[in-house]
Image 1 (tube, rainbow, N blue to C red):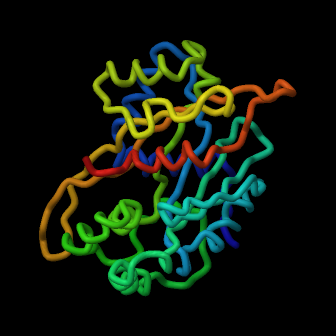
Image 2 (image 1 turned 180 degrees about the vertical axis):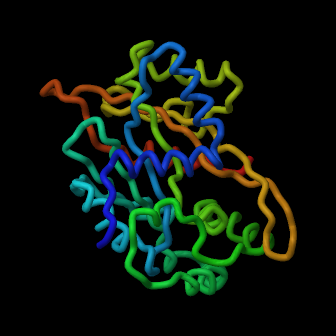
Length: 269
């Protein structure tokens, strides 16, 4: 590996790419900076395709090179995803969650649509800038996007947006103005941003040690292959409230049932 970044530089570059397609995130961050001296991120998340030069196994070393350790792995059978979370020894450094679409579990039609795009991904030595590199394939057609959307919103989103952070997540525990996720979500909604209601506004309960909520994704206009222009979902902003375990330590893991509904923040309404 060459030119390995340290976390501070990595997340700075990642944030700049993120807010270009998710202006709501910077606006909401500024909203909280009116009452809080800082807004600290709990974790970030990425999406990718299995069985490609950009699969989870290929991206993993880039995260480990920044001092992270593997935290846990997850399976989302209904959405045909697998994922790994990574944690850093410095608690102020955001955790990383990477999921990949298990293409072989999709319908033959969806696999056939995705294969030519995935075949365009060049096998080469990766640098951490791959995490804000966008598409490694041609822009899909509107027809391909719509067909995939019916089966896998994840696949359709990834085919258009490419490799980039899907969301940043505010640590509610580290806000000074409030430590209540419901108050945070109400403040965001009152400022005019739509909240993801899938599975309830707050995903999880205190007994699970993790409560999460999020906005619905921003929208961006894109031009598909063939010249069709349409508005599609880009990325969203999440909020996480962690609770102390029996030892008095804040829970640092993830709850698969919560994450399953957070994925729906990029659903097209």
